Length: 102
Image (cartoon, rainbow, N blue to C red; front, side, top):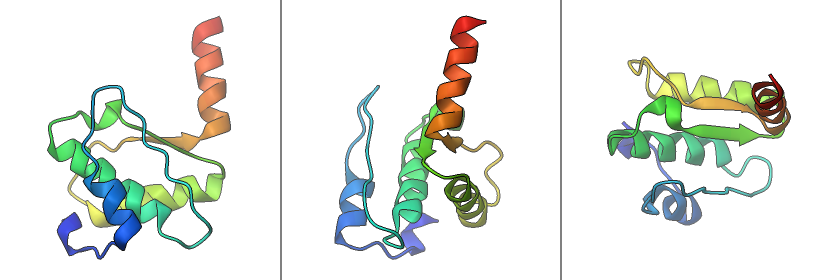
């Protein structure tokens, strides 16, 4: 499905970057530059390579961005039952602390 989405040169570079186990990809750009689309298409690319969606973490700064990512993901891939973990950096940090501290 992501083949029908038009990506610019920089989005394509992120999308086409081969993944290695444990590797992190950072997408930094200004507002309206297509970060969400890039992250969603990259995660789908990773899932199609055989990675379990629940083992993918996508973080962003704002709650609005989390909602945007989830909406785009579900819109682009409506038949995908599992979606990656998508949260703000702050809520992810709190979850890690709670899990660590019990």
